[in-house]
Each structure stands twice: as C-alpha cells, then as structure tokens.
Amino acid sequence: MPAPSTSPAPTPVNSRSRVLIASLIGTTIEFYDFYIYATAAVLVFPTLFFPNSDPTTALLSSFAVFGAAMVARPIGAVVFGHLGDRFGRKGTLVASLLTMGIATFLIGVLPTYAQAGWVATALLVLMRLAQGFALGGEWSGAALVATENAPKGKRALYGTFPQLGAPLGFIIGNGLFLVIGALLPSAAGADPSQPSDAFLNWGWRIPFLFSAVMVAIGLWVRMRLVEAPVFAKTREAGLVRKLPLATVFRNHWKQLILGTFFMLATYVLFYLMTTFSLSYGRTAEDAAVPGLGYEYTTFVLMMIFGVLFFAAFTLISGPLADRYGRRATLIAVTAGILVFGLVWVPLIGLGTVGVVLWLVFGFTLMGMTFGPMGALLPELFPTSVRYTGSGISYNVSSILGAAVAPFIAVALWEAGDGSPWLVGVYLSSMALLTLVALLIGRETKDVGLEEGEAAETTAREETAVTAAH
Image (cartoon, rainbow, N blue to C red; front, side, top):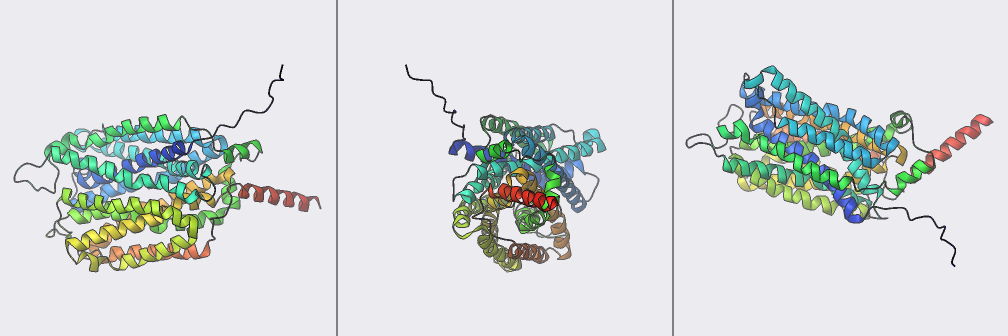
C-alpha cells in the first residue's frame, strides 16, 4: 500500500482574469463616483445646495465641497494603507469599496437646501468626506492587486487595468446622466443647457443610487481573491511592520516626495479635462465669464469621444512602459503635456474641430501619463509598506493637483475674461514640476517587488553589526 503523500498543498493563486477584473472593478466604481459627483457639482448642486449665491460663487462652493474629498483621501490612505500592510490587501479592499458605496448611495437620498437648510449642505460635505476617505485606500489597493500578481515583464501592462477604471467610469457615469437627461428634457422654451425641473427634483439621484449595484458586483469579485504570494512571503518572513506609516516617513521619505510630484501633472490634467472642461464647454458665450456655449448633451458626447482615446492609450502605455521603462515613457509624455497647455487657445480657436482636437489630445496624453502610474508608484516601495507608501503619494498629490485644480481653473478663467489661456499655463507649470521630479527619479522597470525587502533586511543586519562593534 503506497505511503500517504506528505508534499504540501499548492499555494492558492489568483487567476489572471480574477486579478484584472478585481483591480478594474473597484477603480471603475471609484471614478464613476467621481464623475457623477463632478457632473452633479456642475449641473445641480449649485442650485440645490447653494441657492443663495450668485452662479459663479455657487459653482465655486460646489467645487469646494468636491475638493474637500481630496483632503480626506490622504487620511484614508494612511488608515487603509496601515490595514493593507499589516493584515493583507483583500480585506482592506473590501472595506474601502463598501465604505465608498455606502457614502455614494447616501448622497442619492440627501435632502436639499430647500428641505433642510444648512443641514443638507453639511450632510453633503460629510458624505463627500466619506467618499474621499474610502477612495484614499481604493486606488493603491487595486494597483497592488494588479502589480503584485503580474507575471514577469508585464507589471506595467497589468498596472494599466486599475487605471482603465477612469475612462470606463467616465463613460458609464456620464452616459447614465445623458440617458436621464434625454428622458427628462427641459420644457419647451427653457434653456436646453440647464436641467429640467424633474431632473433637479429627482433625476440626478438615480446615478448615485445605481452605484449600489456596481458595488455589489465589486464585492462579489473581491471576496474571491487570495493574497498575492509576494505579500504572503513578507508575512511569513516576519517583515510586516507594526507601524508602516512611521517606516515610510523614516526610510522612504524621498520616494514619497518624488511619487507625489510624479502624479502632479496627471492629476491636474485629469481634473481640467473632466470637471473644468464641462463647465467651460457648456457656459454660454454671452455669459459674464464666457465659455464655449455648447448644449450639455452635445459637449458631453464630444467628451466621451475624447475619453475613448483615454481608454485606448491607457492600455497602449503599459507595453510601452514595460519595454522602454516607466521613467522614459513618462518624461516624453509629460513634455507633451507641457506643450499641450500652451496651445489651448490656438486649438480652441479653430471652432468645433479645434475643440474636439483639444479633447482628443488632452485625453490621449491623460491615458499615456495615467497608465504607467499603476506600476510606477507601487514599485517605489518595498512590500511591507507598499500599500501605505503608494497610497500616500497618490493621494497627497490629489490635494496639490486635484483638490485645488477646478477652483484655480475657474479663477484663472475669470482672470482671462473667458479665455482659458491662463488655465493652460497653469497646466504647463505643473507639468514642469513633474518633469523635474522624473529627471531626479530613477527607473523602476527592473526592480523586483521583493528586492526592497531584501535591501531592508541587509540594511538592518549591517546596522546591527555596526552597533555590535
């Protein structure tokens, strides 16, 4: 009778499809939530939550609440990063997605200022802060699921899948708003660029409530994940940190600073091409601060056309970054962003064709700069602090580049008497800062995800030997 086998059971691994779907679904929901809030911040929130202000002040107030979430994101990055680096990626990703879904759903049932006064505005701020807190842990966790499970030589390609959630979220979110707007059109004789009474009363709530369906799907996918081998080995080797935040600030502060500035131009471009452009595109040409004067549906369709290039070039950027390196790819793209900011006015001056080209070029550059970040930021940090480090860099950059970008853009738009040339200069300036950071930084394409742990172990051993002598 043969002896029973004593070989250990094979370690469970995530299938390629499970990794890609799990990393994609959460960021799709993240950006869906962002886009529906950004759209509502332009279309309905100034009227529903800031009705006692003039239109420009109401819009700026709405954007200020929008930016408040960015302040909460680094806090979420610290909390969820701590949990992810201490206890694992899977449970943390489930918690961040659930928190985000509840906050978004509750926005859909909030009373308006007319119903509850300042309490309604306060609740909107609270829910937006909860969204930001959850989003602070979402991106880095999704990026780690993709990159820590990626096969050799394809980390940047896998890292583009969480990034692909941005264009997909845009298409789903804005597409849903377009459908609702078409079903609830403005009354005859009303301004077609303004939402109808039915849209203001209840139609805007549908996209927020629909997020519950997407979150349920995301939770089902993520509950089926297992921890990546690279994290399991770190835990088995006893390298898990009790306080990952302290370790990051003590040993990896340079990477934190560089990672923050790596993302700066990406964030500014992203929010200018989505939030600001929607305001600028649909503002009437004869307004106090003139815009392009497009009807809402027309301009959003033009934006969706541009976002298709965003999606395509996000995927294209992955193989390029795997072949030529993250740093080299991003240096070239960031130089392109710098030039793009300086040609806004000439492009837009060409009429509708120029506006479409402006959107296409902007979203193409967005895909090319956003795609490699899914691999680059995690590669800056060792496994034991990767969730915390990449999350803080990504989300602190959201304050510098995203929280203030719509607010600054509106102010510069006003200063330019309706011309966005100063907004373009602002984008180019931020691109210059990112370019400097990239020139200072190092290439991470060939860095093994476990090498950082080995380097830390060696450093500790050398310190111990020196102390002993």
